[in-house]
Image (cartoon, rainbow, N blue to C red):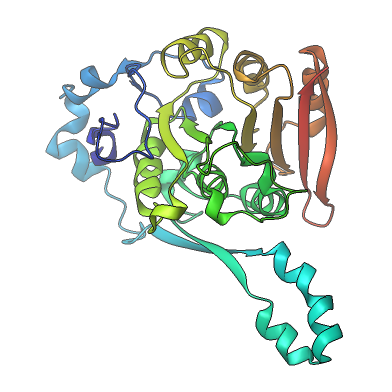
Length: 341
Protein backbone atom coordinates (compact mmCIF):
# COMPACT_ATOMS: atom_id res chain seq x y z
CA UNK A 1 0.00 0.00 0.00
CA UNK A 2 0.98 3.63 -0.33
CA UNK A 3 1.25 3.96 3.44
CA UNK A 4 3.63 1.02 3.69
CA UNK A 5 5.84 2.45 0.96
CA UNK A 6 6.53 5.61 2.95
CA UNK A 7 9.90 5.87 4.65
CA UNK A 8 9.36 5.31 8.37
CA UNK A 9 12.89 5.71 9.72
CA UNK A 10 13.36 9.10 11.38
CA UNK A 11 16.55 10.77 10.14
CA UNK A 12 18.89 12.82 12.27
CA UNK A 13 18.31 16.56 12.27
CA UNK A 14 21.11 18.40 14.03
CA UNK A 15 19.16 21.66 13.90
CA UNK A 16 16.42 20.38 16.20
CA UNK A 17 17.61 19.94 19.77
CA UNK A 18 14.25 18.58 20.95
CA UNK A 19 14.46 15.36 18.93
CA UNK A 20 16.86 12.67 20.09
CA UNK A 21 18.35 10.35 17.49
CA UNK A 22 19.92 7.25 19.04
CA UNK A 23 21.41 4.51 16.88
CA UNK A 24 18.81 3.19 14.44
CA UNK A 25 17.49 -0.36 14.94
CA UNK A 26 16.26 -1.51 11.55
CA UNK A 27 12.48 -1.54 11.36
CA UNK A 28 10.27 -4.25 9.90
CA UNK A 29 6.90 -4.33 8.15
CA UNK A 30 4.41 -5.52 10.74
CA UNK A 31 0.72 -4.86 11.43
CA UNK A 32 -1.28 -5.78 14.51
CA UNK A 33 -3.85 -7.78 12.52
CA UNK A 34 -1.18 -10.51 12.52
CA UNK A 35 -1.93 -10.89 16.23
CA UNK A 36 -5.69 -10.66 16.02
CA UNK A 37 -6.12 -13.01 13.05
CA UNK A 38 -3.00 -15.19 13.21
CA UNK A 39 -2.96 -15.55 16.99
CA UNK A 40 0.62 -14.73 17.93
CA UNK A 41 3.58 -12.38 17.82
CA UNK A 42 5.91 -14.89 16.15
CA UNK A 43 4.99 -14.04 12.58
CA UNK A 44 6.88 -13.94 9.30
CA UNK A 45 8.00 -10.31 9.23
CA UNK A 46 9.91 -8.57 6.45
CA UNK A 47 12.59 -5.96 6.69
CA UNK A 48 11.39 -2.58 5.50
CA UNK A 49 13.92 -2.54 2.65
CA UNK A 50 12.72 -5.95 1.41
CA UNK A 51 9.07 -4.94 1.51
CA UNK A 52 9.73 -1.76 -0.47
CA UNK A 53 11.21 -3.83 -3.28
CA UNK A 54 8.41 -6.42 -3.32
CA UNK A 55 6.57 -6.19 -6.64
CA UNK A 56 4.53 -9.37 -6.49
CA UNK A 57 1.22 -10.11 -8.14
CA UNK A 58 -0.76 -8.35 -5.42
CA UNK A 59 0.54 -4.98 -6.62
CA UNK A 60 -0.59 -5.51 -10.22
CA UNK A 61 -3.13 -3.18 -11.77
CA UNK A 62 -5.62 -6.01 -12.27
CA UNK A 63 -5.38 -7.04 -8.64
CA UNK A 64 -5.91 -3.50 -7.39
CA UNK A 65 -8.96 -2.89 -9.60
CA UNK A 66 -10.53 -6.14 -8.43
CA UNK A 67 -10.25 -5.04 -4.77
CA UNK A 68 -11.89 -1.62 -5.21
CA UNK A 69 -14.82 -1.14 -2.83
CA UNK A 70 -17.46 1.15 -4.41
CA UNK A 71 -18.98 1.81 -0.96
CA UNK A 72 -15.71 2.80 0.73
CA UNK A 73 -15.54 6.22 2.39
CA UNK A 74 -13.81 8.57 -0.09
CA UNK A 75 -12.35 10.49 2.86
CA UNK A 76 -11.58 8.00 5.68
CA UNK A 77 -9.33 10.42 7.58
CA UNK A 78 -10.24 12.48 10.63
CA UNK A 79 -8.49 15.27 12.52
CA UNK A 80 -9.02 14.92 16.27
CA UNK A 81 -8.75 18.20 18.21
CA UNK A 82 -7.92 18.43 21.92
CA UNK A 83 -7.57 21.35 24.34
CA UNK A 84 -6.24 20.56 27.79
CA UNK A 85 -6.50 23.32 30.42
CA UNK A 86 -3.61 23.64 32.86
CA UNK A 87 -4.73 25.98 35.66
CA UNK A 88 -1.95 27.86 37.41
CA UNK A 89 -1.68 27.10 41.09
CA UNK A 90 -0.44 30.64 41.70
CA UNK A 91 -3.79 31.99 40.60
CA UNK A 92 -5.61 29.65 42.99
CA UNK A 93 -3.34 30.68 45.88
CA UNK A 94 -3.89 34.37 45.17
CA UNK A 95 -7.69 34.23 44.89
CA UNK A 96 -8.35 34.54 48.64
CA UNK A 97 -5.90 37.44 48.96
CA UNK A 98 -7.65 39.28 46.11
CA UNK A 99 -11.03 38.74 47.76
CA UNK A 100 -9.69 40.01 51.10
CA UNK A 101 -8.25 43.11 49.48
CA UNK A 102 -11.06 44.01 47.08
CA UNK A 103 -14.20 41.92 47.78
CA UNK A 104 -14.56 41.88 43.99
CA UNK A 105 -15.34 38.48 42.49
CA UNK A 106 -15.02 39.90 38.97
CA UNK A 107 -11.37 40.66 39.62
CA UNK A 108 -10.86 37.12 40.88
CA UNK A 109 -12.39 35.73 37.71
CA UNK A 110 -10.23 38.00 35.55
CA UNK A 111 -7.10 36.82 37.32
CA UNK A 112 -8.04 33.13 37.13
CA UNK A 113 -6.18 32.63 33.88
CA UNK A 114 -4.74 29.31 32.83
CA UNK A 115 -2.41 27.78 30.32
CA UNK A 116 -3.53 25.14 27.91
CA UNK A 117 -2.11 22.55 25.55
CA UNK A 118 -3.77 22.17 22.15
CA UNK A 119 -3.16 19.02 20.14
CA UNK A 120 -4.22 17.96 16.67
CA UNK A 121 -4.05 14.23 16.01
CA UNK A 122 -4.62 13.00 12.45
CA UNK A 123 -5.74 9.46 11.83
CA UNK A 124 -8.60 7.39 10.45
CA UNK A 125 -12.25 7.44 11.43
CA UNK A 126 -13.15 4.64 13.84
CA UNK A 127 -15.30 2.90 11.21
CA UNK A 128 -12.70 3.10 8.41
CA UNK A 129 -11.80 -0.22 6.79
CA UNK A 130 -8.09 0.46 7.42
CA UNK A 131 -8.71 -0.11 11.15
CA UNK A 132 -9.23 -3.82 10.47
CA UNK A 133 -5.53 -4.12 9.65
CA UNK A 134 -4.10 -1.61 12.12
CA UNK A 135 -6.14 -0.73 15.21
CA UNK A 136 -3.66 2.03 16.07
CA UNK A 137 -4.75 4.16 13.13
CA UNK A 138 -7.59 5.75 15.12
CA UNK A 139 -8.25 6.85 18.72
CA UNK A 140 -10.07 4.77 21.31
CA UNK A 141 -11.90 5.55 24.56
CA UNK A 142 -9.19 4.71 27.07
CA UNK A 143 -6.68 7.08 25.45
CA UNK A 144 -9.04 10.02 26.09
CA UNK A 145 -9.52 8.95 29.70
CA UNK A 146 -5.78 8.52 30.28
CA UNK A 147 -5.28 12.10 29.06
CA UNK A 148 -7.44 13.29 31.96
CA UNK A 149 -5.19 11.48 34.41
CA UNK A 150 -2.07 12.86 32.77
CA UNK A 151 -3.30 16.45 33.02
CA UNK A 152 -4.23 15.87 36.67
CA UNK A 153 -0.68 14.63 37.39
CA UNK A 154 1.80 16.55 35.21
CA UNK A 155 4.54 15.96 37.80
CA UNK A 156 4.75 12.36 36.58
CA UNK A 157 6.52 13.57 33.43
CA UNK A 158 8.74 16.32 34.80
CA UNK A 159 12.46 15.48 34.53
CA UNK A 160 11.66 11.87 33.67
CA UNK A 161 12.44 9.35 30.96
CA UNK A 162 9.03 8.38 29.57
CA UNK A 163 8.06 5.72 27.03
CA UNK A 164 4.64 4.97 25.54
CA UNK A 165 3.87 1.42 24.47
CA UNK A 166 1.48 0.73 21.59
CA UNK A 167 1.04 4.45 21.00
CA UNK A 168 -0.94 4.23 17.76
CA UNK A 169 -1.50 7.84 16.70
CA UNK A 170 0.45 9.01 19.75
CA UNK A 171 -2.10 11.03 21.73
CA UNK A 172 -0.90 10.04 25.21
CA UNK A 173 2.80 10.11 24.39
CA UNK A 174 2.55 13.50 22.69
CA UNK A 175 0.62 14.89 25.67
CA UNK A 176 3.27 13.51 28.04
CA UNK A 177 5.93 15.22 25.92
CA UNK A 178 4.14 18.56 26.02
CA UNK A 179 3.41 18.23 29.75
CA UNK A 180 7.09 17.53 30.41
CA UNK A 181 8.05 20.97 29.13
CA UNK A 182 8.83 23.14 32.13
CA UNK A 183 6.88 26.09 30.74
CA UNK A 184 3.68 24.01 30.55
CA UNK A 185 3.66 22.85 34.16
CA UNK A 186 2.13 24.15 37.36
CA UNK A 187 4.59 26.16 39.39
CA UNK A 188 3.45 24.75 42.71
CA UNK A 189 6.54 23.16 44.26
CA UNK A 190 4.42 20.53 46.01
CA UNK A 191 3.31 19.14 42.64
CA UNK A 192 6.32 19.61 40.41
CA UNK A 193 9.74 18.13 40.86
CA UNK A 194 12.20 20.80 39.81
CA UNK A 195 15.67 20.27 38.44
CA UNK A 196 18.89 21.99 39.39
CA UNK A 197 18.86 23.92 36.12
CA UNK A 198 16.25 25.96 34.30
CA UNK A 199 15.88 23.40 31.52
CA UNK A 200 13.81 20.26 31.57
CA UNK A 201 15.72 17.00 31.46
CA UNK A 202 12.71 15.00 30.28
CA UNK A 203 12.95 12.56 27.38
CA UNK A 204 9.84 11.02 25.84
CA UNK A 205 10.03 8.02 23.52
CA UNK A 206 6.80 7.14 21.68
CA UNK A 207 6.62 3.62 20.24
CA UNK A 208 4.41 1.24 18.32
CA UNK A 209 5.03 -2.09 16.63
CA UNK A 210 2.71 -1.45 13.69
CA UNK A 211 4.63 -0.02 10.72
CA UNK A 212 1.53 1.69 9.27
CA UNK A 213 0.77 3.38 12.59
CA UNK A 214 4.36 4.62 12.86
CA UNK A 215 3.95 6.70 9.69
CA UNK A 216 0.98 8.57 11.18
CA UNK A 217 2.57 8.71 14.63
CA UNK A 218 5.64 10.53 13.32
CA UNK A 219 3.45 12.88 11.34
CA UNK A 220 1.49 13.74 14.50
CA UNK A 221 4.66 14.42 16.46
CA UNK A 222 5.75 16.95 13.85
CA UNK A 223 2.27 18.47 13.75
CA UNK A 224 2.29 19.10 17.50
CA UNK A 225 5.73 20.56 18.02
CA UNK A 226 5.64 23.55 20.41
CA UNK A 227 5.62 26.91 18.69
CA UNK A 228 7.82 28.69 21.23
CA UNK A 229 11.33 27.98 22.48
CA UNK A 230 10.16 28.08 26.09
CA UNK A 231 7.75 25.21 25.42
CA UNK A 232 10.23 23.01 23.55
CA UNK A 233 12.76 22.08 26.23
CA UNK A 234 11.81 18.39 26.36
CA UNK A 235 13.22 15.80 23.95
CA UNK A 236 11.06 13.42 21.92
CA UNK A 237 11.77 10.41 19.72
CA UNK A 238 9.73 7.77 17.93
CA UNK A 239 10.70 4.13 17.31
CA UNK A 240 9.26 0.77 16.43
CA UNK A 241 8.92 -1.61 19.37
CA UNK A 242 7.35 -5.05 18.98
CA UNK A 243 6.76 -6.51 22.42
CA UNK A 244 8.67 -9.46 23.82
CA UNK A 245 11.80 -10.22 25.81
CA UNK A 246 14.27 -10.42 22.92
CA UNK A 247 12.97 -7.38 21.02
CA UNK A 248 12.73 -5.21 24.13
CA UNK A 249 16.29 -6.14 25.16
CA UNK A 250 17.52 -5.08 21.73
CA UNK A 251 15.52 -1.88 22.08
CA UNK A 252 17.05 -1.21 25.49
CA UNK A 253 20.55 -1.71 24.12
CA UNK A 254 20.36 0.03 20.74
CA UNK A 255 17.67 2.68 21.22
CA UNK A 256 17.57 3.45 24.96
CA UNK A 257 21.35 3.03 25.28
CA UNK A 258 20.81 0.81 28.34
CA UNK A 259 18.95 3.54 30.22
CA UNK A 260 15.62 2.32 31.56
CA UNK A 261 12.50 4.47 31.81
CA UNK A 262 10.95 6.09 34.87
CA UNK A 263 7.44 6.05 33.38
CA UNK A 264 5.78 3.71 30.89
CA UNK A 265 2.40 4.67 29.41
CA UNK A 266 -0.21 2.65 27.54
CA UNK A 267 -3.91 2.79 26.67
CA UNK A 268 -6.25 0.52 24.72
CA UNK A 269 -3.53 -2.07 24.17
CA UNK A 270 -5.27 -5.24 25.38
CA UNK A 271 -7.22 -6.91 22.58
CA UNK A 272 -5.85 -10.48 22.58
CA UNK A 273 -4.74 -12.84 25.33
CA UNK A 274 -1.61 -13.72 23.38
CA UNK A 275 -0.09 -10.28 23.94
CA UNK A 276 -0.30 -10.30 27.74
CA UNK A 277 2.94 -12.21 28.35
CA UNK A 278 4.99 -10.21 25.77
CA UNK A 279 3.61 -7.03 27.33
CA UNK A 280 4.92 -7.88 30.79
CA UNK A 281 8.22 -9.12 29.37
CA UNK A 282 8.61 -5.69 27.79
CA UNK A 283 7.58 -3.76 30.90
CA UNK A 284 9.95 -5.80 33.06
CA UNK A 285 12.82 -5.13 30.64
CA UNK A 286 12.32 -1.39 30.12
CA UNK A 287 10.93 -0.05 33.42
CA UNK A 288 13.26 1.31 36.08
CA UNK A 289 13.05 -0.92 39.15
CA UNK A 290 13.55 1.82 41.71
CA UNK A 291 10.65 4.24 41.55
CA UNK A 292 9.47 3.27 38.05
CA UNK A 293 5.75 3.25 37.26
CA UNK A 294 3.73 1.74 34.41
CA UNK A 295 0.45 3.60 33.87
CA UNK A 296 -2.13 1.74 31.81
CA UNK A 297 -5.69 2.64 30.84
CA UNK A 298 -7.99 -0.27 30.05
CA UNK A 299 -11.47 -0.11 28.49
CA UNK A 300 -13.94 -2.96 28.69
CA UNK A 301 -15.05 -4.20 25.25
CA UNK A 302 -17.73 -6.78 24.53
CA UNK A 303 -15.90 -8.28 21.56
CA UNK A 304 -12.49 -8.48 23.25
CA UNK A 305 -12.10 -11.79 25.12
CA UNK A 306 -9.50 -10.47 27.56
CA UNK A 307 -10.55 -9.28 31.00
CA UNK A 308 -8.64 -6.85 33.17
CA UNK A 309 -8.40 -9.65 35.76
CA UNK A 310 -6.20 -11.66 33.39
CA UNK A 311 -3.88 -8.67 32.96
CA UNK A 312 -3.69 -8.03 36.70
CA UNK A 313 -3.02 -11.69 37.50
CA UNK A 314 -0.19 -11.71 34.96
CA UNK A 315 1.22 -8.53 36.50
CA UNK A 316 1.49 -10.22 39.90
CA UNK A 317 3.14 -13.29 38.31
CA UNK A 318 5.76 -11.01 36.73
CA UNK A 319 6.56 -9.34 40.06
CA UNK A 320 4.40 -6.21 39.94
CA UNK A 321 2.00 -4.69 42.40
CA UNK A 322 -0.85 -2.52 41.16
CA UNK A 323 -3.18 0.26 42.28
CA UNK A 324 -6.43 1.48 40.72
CA UNK A 325 -5.98 5.26 40.47
CA UNK A 326 -8.91 6.37 38.30
CA UNK A 327 -12.12 4.74 37.08
CA UNK A 328 -15.27 5.43 35.11
CA UNK A 329 -17.69 2.64 35.96
CA UNK A 330 -20.37 3.93 33.60
CA UNK A 331 -18.12 3.70 30.53
CA UNK A 332 -16.08 0.78 31.84
CA UNK A 333 -12.64 2.42 31.84
CA UNK A 334 -9.94 2.00 34.47
CA UNK A 335 -6.46 3.46 34.98
CA UNK A 336 -3.92 1.39 36.91
CA UNK A 337 -0.42 2.10 38.14
CA UNK A 338 2.00 -0.83 38.27
CA UNK A 339 5.27 -0.90 40.20
CA UNK A 340 7.88 -3.54 40.98
CA UNK A 341 7.19 -5.17 44.31
